[in-house]
Image (cartoon, rainbow over all chains, first blue to last red; front, side, top):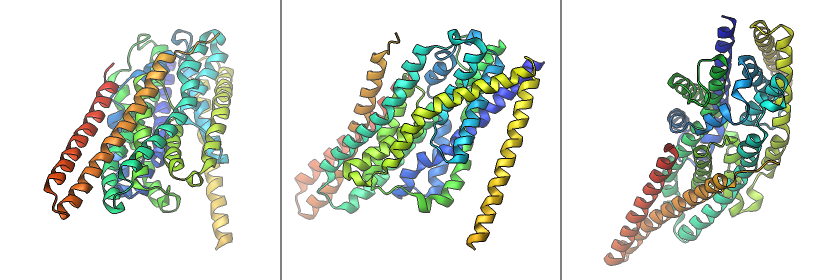
Length: 367
Length: 77
């Protein structure tokens, strides 16, 4: 009974994580289409949300990597998966609160690895899998997306450079409907599968799924729904702020950036590499910008990506390990996860209330 | 000593490179073809307009084909 309750908490937490992932990443997925006016913000968000949902169904390779390539499925229980998820959520909340760069994907894997290290020792962590499937692709993907987008835009300018700008812009805006759709599809494919993998890991630990099996259909549908709903909900926030935060690029650059980002994420998904989609899309946008004018690129974003690389994995692993330690203070049952969940909810509530109060005070002072 | 499996990584990199660049080139050729059709018609050069139109159609089919093949590869196990 207690074990069942922990599983329910883990599945609920994983889906909440998936929702926030979609919520958080809407900007990355739709910004290029909206900034070049290829799509209206409302249409872009609804379109991205639908394709996020569809994308979650087209591959299971990343879910298999998350479920079996980083930690020994037989050596962990549901509490380890819970602690890993909470570690990732705490890290994401801390980085959001203090404005630090992060990667939700790396935080998720770091949290689970940290909790596994404490619960089952170094023997339960697959170092080769981590380097092979996570760290090396994490370093390669943004650089690859940058280079591919730069080469693509140079090729496009060579072909259409002497034509009148009006028809060229209209043509690439039309093309962006497809390239933006592919980017949203690729985002759903890679990011939704991370949640599927974590839920599959918990189901294996609970004895409901055989090791090495694909996630059940209800896991795929619920992960697809959570990320899609998150993308749609996050979009309304983006619609309000888009006017001041748009990326300046022409439709040809937008098309090249979206094509490069989508190609890199889809290729990685096929081979089971769980990428940071944010880093990959940022790399593609910077590549398309740099090919035209180096000064057009916000190099601070590149610095943020490097900082996120260095910080996220070890920090989320440390938090995941600490959370597991705290749950064990209350024994091996459901009490520990329940106490941690309650403490996290109260802390988040206080932090949000403080943020709102400070916001009102600043507004009042400025007024 | 940890060994990185380079073959799938290189395949993913080459797949992304080939897919994105070829689709961008194909779509640029569609735009080029369509834009030149209009120019040639205005100049009364019907033959050239037809040739540019054919270029646009072929490039369009190529772009659709590249996207379709890419998606088929990703959906295959």
